[in-house]
Amino acid sequence: MASKSKNPFTWVEIYVEDMSRAQKFYEEVLQFEMTPMQMPGGFGDLQMVSFPWAEDGSNISGALCKTKEIKPGPGGTLVYFTSEDCGIEASRVESAGGKVIQQKEPIGEHGFCSICMDTEGNRIAFHSNK
Image 1 (cartoon, rainbow, N blue to C red):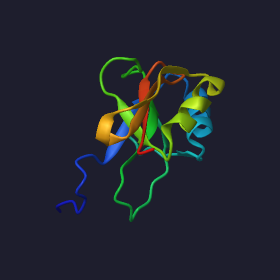
Image 2: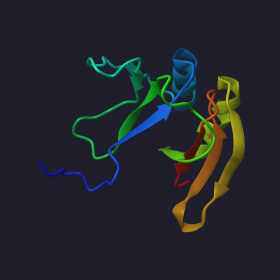
Image 3: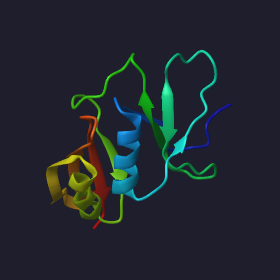
Image 4: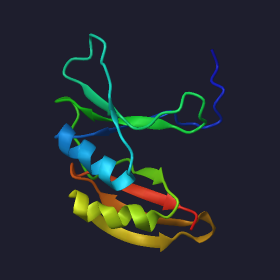
């Protein structure tokens, strides 16, 4: 069956060492509740806690993931979270245990972004139009 989504991405996984610490960080910074996912057999030690998800939404979602197979870190992919004002989320990062790498900066006609590090050592970013 072909996807009805026009988005090229459907799911993002952010790998963590300490699930409860990471879940607390993202819930505090992004101001929403995350949900533990039930894993079917055959996934080994994989644990997942999902970000909000709307079945009829056109946006993507994802989960925090913990497994001994994949470790978190600052290199590689950078995930951008959408926001009304990326400076607000960035202002919550340090009190939640993370680090602000780049404060809110304009990115020309594309709006603004802020780059941070979560409690697990992953680089993440926030994007807004104002």
